[in-house]
Amino acid sequence: MYSRVVRDRDEWMRRLGPLYPASVALRRTTVMRVGPNAPIGEDLARSAPWVVGLGAITGFAGYATAWVVARWGASPLLAAAAAVAALAIVGGAVMESGFARWAERRAGRAAVIASVTSMVVRFAALASIAPGRWLAALVVAELAARWSAVLLQRLGDPIFDDAERPGYSVGEVSWGVIGAVTAAVAIAAAWAFGWRGIAALVACGACAFALGLEAQRRDGQPGSDALAAVAALAGAIVLVAAALIAPAWPAWTP
Image (cartoon, rainbow, N blue to C red; front, side, top):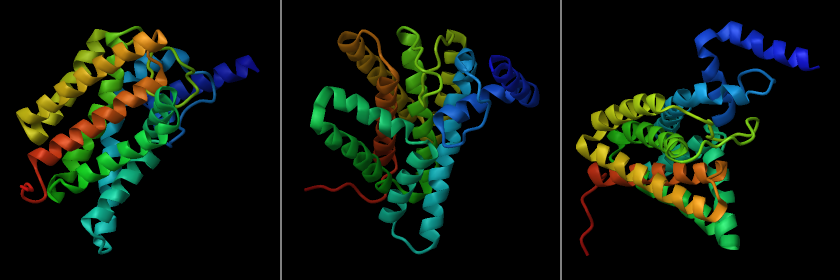
């Protein structure tokens, strides 16, 4: 049995070549279960750049859903709701379910409120962005969410969770990989929103560090659910920042 499992992994590696780590990232962070049935724990570190890069695909999927719904005559509010739902579906609800478990351990029954609030904030922020900037906002938000989760693992101790369980854990990732991924995400944020996009990324990094310290204090080490909480917070930060940078309508002044 073991030899058959190993051959399955080796066969996938031969077929995909340098794209094999992408299949690992797809399998763990999206609904696309591509890759071997063999254990993939030793492949997690190599999948780290792809874990972040796939945010561009999930962000585009959210935008495409909103575009289709809008073409059917839906209002921007309904299109925004469809986009947020699509992000959760395409992402395999990894962020949402992990955040809900993390909140449950800290807030008990109030975790439901926290989980719903997270989705509502993302929906309200997206609906408040000028529709012409939705693609950039969704892609950068998804990139920043995944980047924050990967960054936390470099700032603290490596997280070696169950590799077969969906999540953003990538184990022991190098500073070189973190630097390259950070530069790519920063370029995307700057292209989309200028220096204020970079400021939003800095805020995401600061929140990842703060939440990591909190998880270290309470749990001894951040786990996969803490990574999902970081990702949810970072995604909301970017969308709120985008709503302030490119509002759909003039600011309300009471």
